[in-house]
Length: 315
Image (cartoon, rainbow, N blue to C red):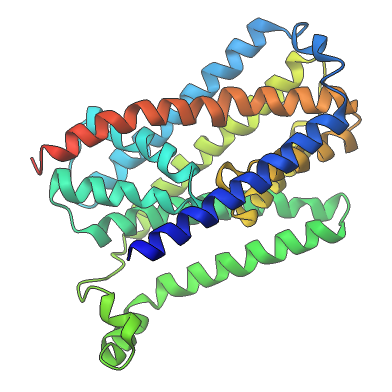
């Protein structure tokens, strides 16, 4: 167990170092180091508005977790929903594939005595609809222009969505197979017998989709405002498409935070929209600072409060 944990840490650290190297190279090539003055000429009122949208995005995610908890017959206070949702943003973003998001299921188990895999079901709905909306937005690029790497990213995302969708609707079948062969396959012996994806009625599923749509929508608007703060009025539809592609690329890289890959891909797409290389990197770094890195710091702070809550046990 200790060996596996060390291997995961080594892999995580290695991926992060690769991402930081990519980021350093992209920043160096962009020329922003020599022209750092552009960061001082930004429209600060618009920057504050973009920061406000980051906070709104977090608030929507807090509400989504509260909404999900109530649908799974576990009413949760706004206080606890805020703590677990924001704390999980830290754990999710420092781990490959955002597996740290499972902390929410752990928190609910310890704090509210909710079955761990009920929490996993809640997380499944969040991630599935986020991927679905990102893919639908990114796939609109077929109306613009298809490039080799873009096709690969879209195909990988489509396959992942299909697999998740298929697993969701055939979960009971797969679980029965796991139970049947659990005595013959060592790995399956570690899977709890009470594992089950708990499905929600269509009305509740539609509600989760709508909330997720507004959550991602606020992120798209935030990036557009950041670009506006640098003096660029970009086509919001095309910008949304490119932003979605860069997020997918960052997720596919498995690098924590998508560091390097996210910045490089989004910077490249902004250049395609006619933004100067230096300005493109300025927009990307500024947007990442007031969204992802701001959220990471906030999540770290809330993670400390979450640990105190968990140590108190179930309510």
